[in-house]
Length: 187
Image (cartoon, rainbow, N blue to C red; front, side, top):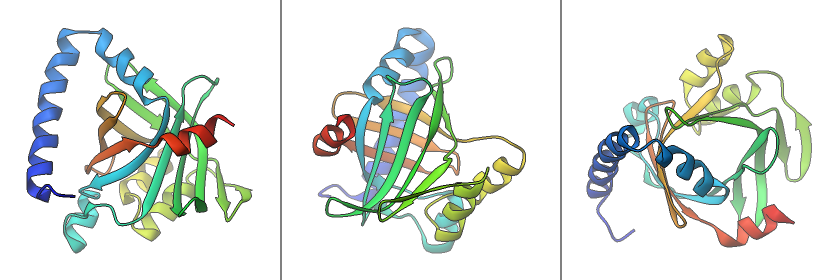
């Protein structure tokens, strides 16, 4: 949080351009990105979706504990996305994901929600509607779901500590690996 928000955004945009060029030059880079994504990630910084930026400005340092997990060892691969108070999940979404190594695009659809631990199935597009209504997701995901297209991230980079991506709503995001959440994920 010591860095100015505009400097972080400029760095993310620069990294995005660099990694796009590097991925074109080295086909193995996309596979390495997927390998590095396996685990748990805490959202640290986001510009928010383009719609959110128009309403309230860029969000920048994310004020809540939001953790996403990516399990690349299962078939299908699995994603979760949760909002926490301490270690208690208030809400978590669950679903499968696919990763296109050619484009580094990760597509996903949440098919379950957990509210304070109670898991409930979601209809197709249900998570997109909840995300758009709460401001945590993009309205474009609702339109995509109606056309039976999944939500997505275009991954910029991922290594053992940091991951960066541009979401389907146009926003940029930065995560740091969360080793405690990763341990719980593996239990």
